[in-house]
Image (tube, rainbow, N blue to C red; front, side, top):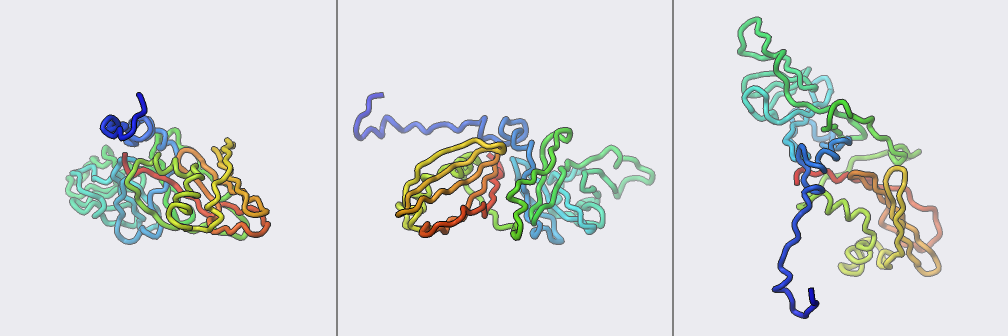
Length: 276
């Protein structure tokens, strides 16, 4: 195409999304890839007496803690008549549907079918979709992939730092696909402009220096290395990305005015798609 001034009329085509990377429902390439990993689906603090409705990877689910302390992640709609289990009642074992009282264990097995004739064995043939869970440092994780391929829960070295403890922070929803925000995690140039030169110094003036950049693959993913000359000092900032959707980064409030040891990661973030 010949480059011409004031050429908006000829440049109105909006690029299509790439479904291979952005569609995350069951059976999609990215969706099946993400389902091979443990994903955080709720904060432990959110599990009160009432079940919690969530949407993860295009699936509507309910997260609850039964009265014995076990956590369940089930398909939202009851296998009996489709009532929403977000209105269910957590029991000592499992959850009772509000509509007809059917009870499901955290593994999806049907424990009770009130209203069936005495001696009915219907519950032996009924199951509710359920996913394995793992509770860790205030987060509830679920594995949504094939049961026979369930991996061990990953323990990164940043999860166990002497004299430090992990604390759950916050959830926020961004109106974009998961790859758009995850791409941002390995983009150190935007820190100099978006968080400094363009909008004023949201962190420190040291961030206004555009860094020299390197990207390096590691055993667990990749890192970026952003190197800045700040006066007589050299500030090196390294952030990690662990596929498919985890990154961790060091502290942002850095004046870079004195020599010091590099900061360990202080924030670990998952970009978990609600849907496409």
